Image 1 (cartoon, rainbow, N blue to C red):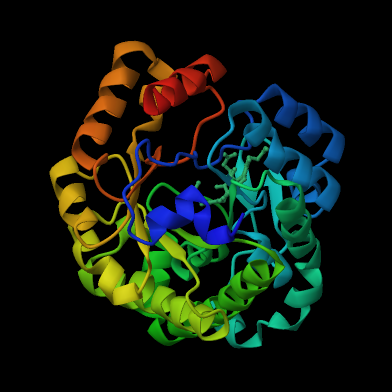
Image 2 (image 1 turned 30 degrees about the vertical axis):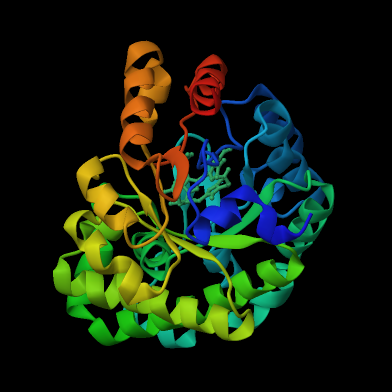
Length: 341
Ligand code: CP3
């Protein structure tokens, strides 16, 4: 099959498909017993990310079980700071921890190790394209510079990324330098994923929603534009999904300002506004992940509303954020039955 025929890619090109292609953010994860089993065999979460045999295995698990239209590379956005020697660890139940970066350290960051460090992830992409069903779109990804920077600055997750916002106000030059470095590295990383067989890529800006208007332009839009331009210069026509979670009204200009083909929508985006965004091109989302946990009417109504409002235009059905470990497998099956009829 020519790659352009893969359903998700057709939607990114602006086609409307019934039923819409569907995949779920974090579809390889702890809600699956087979993931938990492989994860235990790998040792740590990072060992899993850097082991192509096991990373291919967990990427394929949700495809075998559910037959999603797209498969997302199994890795993490924080492999970039890991390649910068920021002492990344994942503490069970607590999320990521890194050595927090100080403003004066930014100019000493050395990206030269990244190519070697990330080689196992690129190998995973190569094997995945060979092993996936022909009709399944393979999505590569990276974190947006702002979201990656928030973890590098605080050294762990926070509820509102106050340390990174303060860093930006107090040290604008160091922030600009950090985001530019991350944008350059992320673009190189995405280019390698595309060359290795990824059909398209997604840029996760999970913390875009904490920025004020001016900071959003400087920290969320500008570095993503830099990635998009660099990727397209190396891979003409590369298809890119941007997901600025929590961006609210600032979503209106995001596609045009960054150059992404499709915008990912979190569940707080009103469907009437989503329909306006869809008039400009493909959208992806935006079911509340908690509807998937609740199941029953809550799930059916959520799916119904999205399909009624966005189902006739270019739509990639997805959640508004990642699937959580407590999502019942039977509810994922019910979701797919409802979408696919
Ligand atoms: O299936 C997929 O979607 C592909 C794999 C993927 C993971 N992380 C695996 C993962 C992707 C695309 C990500 C992106 C990611 N990682 C983001 C952006 C998307 C989002 O969720 O907002 C962010 C912010 C991270 C950083 C990160 N990684 C955090 C904050 C955590 C801890 C939270 C948690 O759920 O435990 C992780 C760990 C992580 N990344 C897990 C998985 C499957 C759980 C780790 C485990 O198995 O113990």
